[in-house]
Image (cartoon, rainbow, N blue to C red; front, side, top):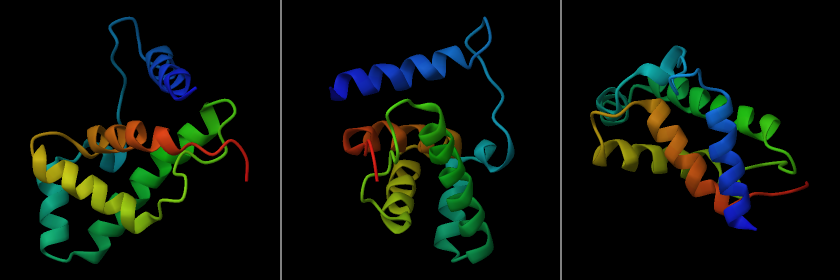
Length: 116
């Protein structure tokens, strides 16, 4: 069953891309993981909030788009999700917040809630 949800997630991403498998990332999703690290290391609360909210919006879009999914985050709170993104970014500083949020979604896919 988990494999099926992962395939749905991958197929949903593929459907949203153009014929060249590309799509536009908007807003904070374009910032580098290096900038994410800097915001957390410098305790820049405004930037941290913007980063968390962009990632939350990404996950909310998946909740809306994936059938039979109420909450892709399972029981993982925003603090846990933020720390996952930060760890991803520390390991991949040249990637983007969008890449980190996508990676988080794949990880959270294991904990999908079908209903409240």
